[in-house]
Image (cartoon, rainbow, N blue to C red; front, side):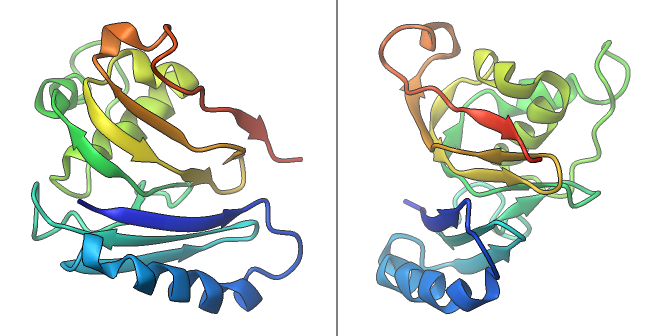
Length: 166
C-alpha cells in the first residue's frame, strides 16, 4: 500500500521544508518500496512512497498533468479507470485528455480538469489523496474515500475543499 506525506499552505520558502518532508517520507518507505517521489511548489510539498501494482513502469507519483498545473499523489485503486479513460478520447462529449501514464489514478486529473470537485461522483474505488493545483487551486484538507461512486453524499466520506489561490 502506498503512502504519502505533505505540507500545505506553506508560508514562505517551501525549499526550507523539503528536507523535513523527505525525512517524513522515509519513515513510511515500507509502505511503498518501489518508488519515491516528491513535489515542491510555491505553497505545498508532497512526498509519495509507491507500491507499484497498476502500471509499474510509468505510474510513478506524484502524477502531473501535461501542462504541469495539476499535481496529484494517491494511495489506492480506481476500479473503473479503464471505462472512464475511454470517455476522454475527445469523441464522447468530454474534452480530450492526454494521459501520460497507464496509472489507474491518473484519471483523477482528467476528471478534475473536466468536473472540478464533482469528480468524485464518477469514481469507484478505494483511495486517499492530497493534491495541489499549482497557480490556480490548493487543497485545504485531505479526502479519504472508500465507497462506491453512488455513496459519496452520505456520511461515509469527508469532503474535499478547494479554494482559489489569490
